[in-house]
Image (tube, rainbow, N blue to C red; front, side):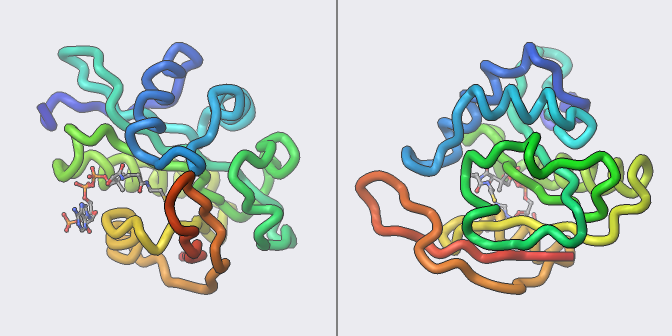
Length: 179
Ligand SMILES: CC(C)(COP(=O)(O)OP(=O)(O)OC[C@H]1O[C@@H](n2cnc3c(N)ncnc32)[C@H](O)[C@@H]1OP(=O)(O)O)[C@@H](O)C(=O)NCCC(=O)NCCS
């Protein structure tokens, strides 16, 4: 299957598949909603990539991002899940903020996440060469994602205590990572 997976820019028609991945990737209380994903597609489709099996048509992964001004403060309020992409995204922003990333459970461990992540970095380097910094936050509990980011050269630069608040489970710290 992995040989037939392509990476492409998002379409509005991907929204149901994106929400299925979201619901299978994050605990309730940490998931973001459909309206927000539609806003993300509308705001910066060039920074929103999809992994799709070209044989079956199944969409099994996504990664999305925004471009922020370099003087944008990075704190819990700004980073809050569900923040409005229109308020923070600027086409000339020099800092890439990766807002979300997920792969269907049955697609994991097959280098699809790696391909999506690298495709986004390469697209940014090619189409937005003025980007000087890449940033993201990850829960201390998301080991696979943390390892992937570290392998791609991202370093921990800070922590927001009890940032993620899943329903019916203890809060988790967010680690800020940058490259
Ligand atoms: C993070 C995620 C997208 C990775 O996707 P994936 O397709 O399974 O990842 P890949 O197979 O491409 O693996 C890439 C790297 O991730 C790390 N990784 C993947 N699965 C891992 C696991 N089970 N344990 C530890 N590290 C793992 C490894 O560093 C791996 O590189 P390597 O194969 O050279 O060792 C996927 O695990 C996922 O959807 N998780 C739930 C949502 C999530 O945590 N999103 C991140 C939000 S910040």
